Image (cartoon, rainbow, N blue to C red; front, side, top):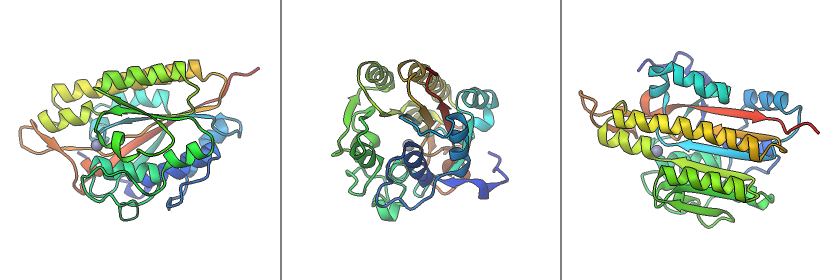
Length: 277
Ligand SMILES: [Zn+2]
C-alpha cells in the first residue's frame, strides 16, 4: 500500500464522538477528550443552513481500510457520491475491533476507556450510547450476536438487535427505520473482516463482502432519505480499522499492528436537509 503523504491531516478516531455530539447538540460523553472535526462541522452548517442534525445513522463496516479504497478508486468515488465529506482517520492501538470502536464512540483513548486488548467487556466509561439516550434520542444498535459492538455498549438505554449475520443486521436496520421512531441507529457489518481473516484482504470472498457493505450503505442512505425526509439528517460511514495480508500469497489476513494498512481508514459524512414546507 502507498502510505498517504499528508499523515498529519489524519484525525484520531476519537474525533467522531465530539463531532456527532456537536452536530446533534447533544452533550459530549464525560471522558471525551477530542474536538469536533472542523471541516465536517463546516460542511454540515452549509448543507443544513446552520441547523442541527435531528436524526443520525452510523454505518460501521468492519475492517474497511484505506487498503481497499486505494485499490478500487471507482468504489471510493461511489461512496463519496453519497457521503462527500471524507475524513482521513487514524485508529488507535492495538488496531482491533473492540479497542477501536470503544474509542470511536466514547471519544476517549484506550487507556481511558479501558479496553486495551482484544476483549469485549461492557464499557464503564460514557459513550454516545449514554449521551444520546440521556438527551432524549431513541437509540438502537443492530449487530451480529456476540460481536464487539453487540457486547461492549450494553447496559445503556438503547434497543439492542442481535442478529445471525450481516444480511439480517441490514434487514433489521431497515425494519427499525420503517417501524420505530428511532433517532440514532448504529448498523454494523462484520463479513468483510471475517473474510479478510480467513481468506485474505483481496480474496474474492472478502471483496464480495466489501461490495455487500457498499450496497448496504447505499440502501440505508436511500431509506433514511425516505423515512427521515422531514428531518435534518446525517449518515456516517465509519469503519474501525483496516487490515493486511499475513502471507505472501494473500490468502490470510489480520490487523492489530501499528502499520498504515491497519491504522488508516476513511470516514465519510452525508448531510441532507429536511424537506422544505
Ligand atoms: Zn474490526
